[in-house]
Length: 149
Image (cartoon, rainbow, N blue to C red; front, side, top):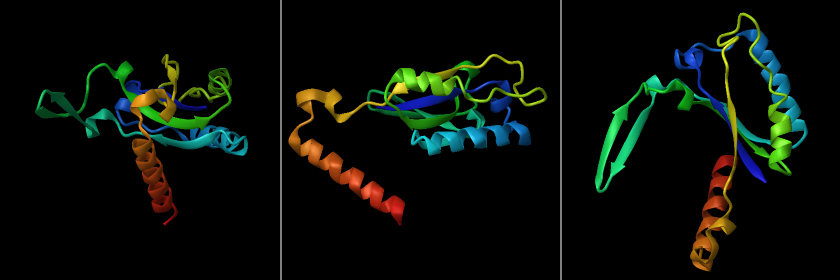
């Protein structure tokens, strides 16, 4: 099962404050554990929402909205994509994520990490026709080739 582990933003991440060397070292060690265990597929931090944009779809109308966006607790500061046996295994890994150290940005501030299963082609049922399945497999193969190049 694949899961996306979503690191929620806080005031420090939205202000563009980066973690200190101690936190980066601890996160590097944690990421090494994930890779060695065959769990980590991808992981990245995101710039603050002030550097982002949203596109609102309303009927045929599309409106671009510049950041920053309100409701920091609803924003994403980073993510991992993990391959695990169960959501319970993902929870156990999340419990091992290093917490901010004293002096680090966001230290002492409550934070949340969300775990969401990634959908699979089977979730679409009969609407995902053999033709659509073939197209999806072809596109995934092209993406994989592009990443190798």
